[in-house]
Structure formats: structure tokens, C-alpha cells
Length: 157
Image (tube, rainbow, N blue to C red):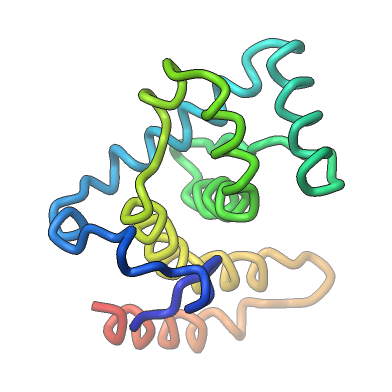
């Protein structure tokens, strides 16, 4: 099994996963739904407060979903990671509204796809953070990091 960013083997119930569905999932649609949910939960001060209050009750942290910037793929990684971290909060939030649930809910198989997407983006996010440091020169590390990323993505594919 590939590395799943936010999931342990104990979290996976094979009865919940439709392996046929997994083969045919549209990753763009899944990311678009996460983006839509993040946008919806931040669209008004009332909605933002409601989501943060629910998050605080369930996690003891007053946080909201992150919204990515389509042209900055690292932000998609951070948006997905926050969604994984807040999966239970998201499911409770959606359970309160059949309309939102129908529009934004992810199946167990789709959550696995989110994990896979994040595991693919994680090496790039780490490289970007390393190369973006301003206190230390990083130009000399560029080629080795680039080579390592090529090897990682050869292994992934």
C-alpha cells in the first residue's frame, strides 16, 4: 500500500471503500469540492464563526479550512492537509445540511484519493520550503533536490 498522509491502517475500513469507484474517480472534481467547501465555510462572518466554533468543540482548536490559490500548487497541498486534519469536523459540518452534504461530501474512497494526492505533493512542498529559506544560500542544493524529486516521482509513477 502506498503512503497515505493522513491515514493509518486502523483508519481504513475496507468495507467502506469501493475499489471499483477508486479506479474511476476524477481527482479534479475532488479537489474542486474541497475548494468549494473551504470557500463556502469562509464566505460570511457567520459561516466562518459557525465552522470555527464546531472545530473548537471537536478539536479544541479554533481553526478554519484553508483555501488554495489555483496557481500555487503548494497551497493545494496545505488546503488538502488541513481538510484531512479536520475530516471529522467537516463530516459533522456537512451532516447539518443535506444541501451542503450533497454538494461537498467525499466518500471514503475519495478521502483516500486526497491522501494519495497529498503524498504526491508532499516532496514538492518540502523542496519548496527548503529552497525558499532566505537566511541560508540554497542555490547549491537546487540540482540535488531536483534530482531527488525526479527519482521520487519515477518511484511514484
